[in-house]
Length: 189
Length: 179
Ligand SMILES: [Zn+2]
Image 1 (tube, rainbow over the protein chains, first blue to last red):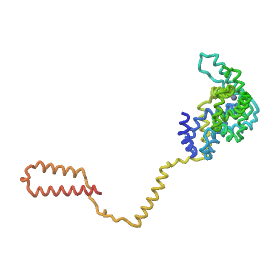
Image 2: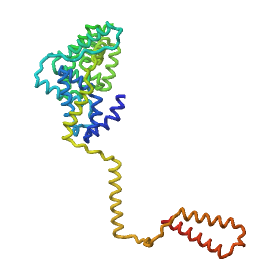
Image 3: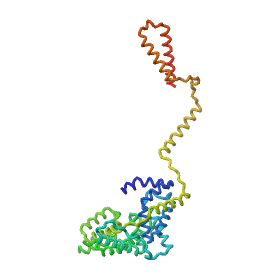
Image 4: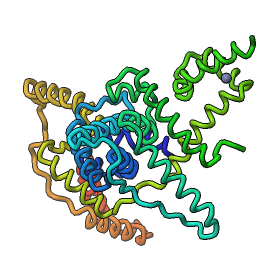
């Protein structure tokens, strides 16, 4: 389904956006908004700020549409811009580490498996906490990878860094996050 | 000896694992890693751990935002940018092509006609014909003819009159149709 969308609908919406059709833009963004907002929230650890950054991203993307290159994946371009917006904001704010974690406590629907629920909730919180504690560059690469589904080469291009630097950040981020899962015996059968 | 060889291989896999996941290594390299993975439990574990972290993160529920609030944000962004770029409704490509071909042809034809005007004979006026009425009249004339079984009893002059009348009307209609 995702592929059908990216193959047929998305290119059409994008060319309408390039010509300046705001309605097409709403439709295009609707597909990404949840993912984009979650990405921004986890980049800056602040839901309210993420909403502002989201709006800033929307405006930047719209303004830059005439420069959009069809050969690139739209999601890569979109998240590249969102990432720049977030990084700029973080620089201005000079956030060094965890300040106020505002990611909402997830809701679980299955009322029977209480132990499982609690365990999953703890895992999720620990994982988010660990992501939060990653150095900014590692967190950025990890989150970009998870939300934009870019390849590492694409991430390197979007963040203007050598591929090996990107891979290094990912490697260190992953090493730390693996430890969280080990506490939950996820990989021990 | 096999184990040190393997260790070196495994270390290399650790470096290349990301590009392996992206399928961005040379074909032969991809194949040789797949081969190695079949035999090497520790590299399988490396791969599995990465996938587990990614899966666990994927399972963390997305941050919830108020849909109405979001819509407001989007419209506000739209308003902000509306002044910077004006919407130009697209011209479908087929019209561009047709326009490109047909307009020069039309211009050429008009230019030619201006140089060589066509002389027409359509300067006389036609009486407007009421077709329905004419047809009804023809119909009734024919009825009169056919009901008059004994032609001999019909005066010749009356028959001629009727026939001529019919011929005129048919001529009228066919001329009008030609036009
Ligand atoms: Zn190995």
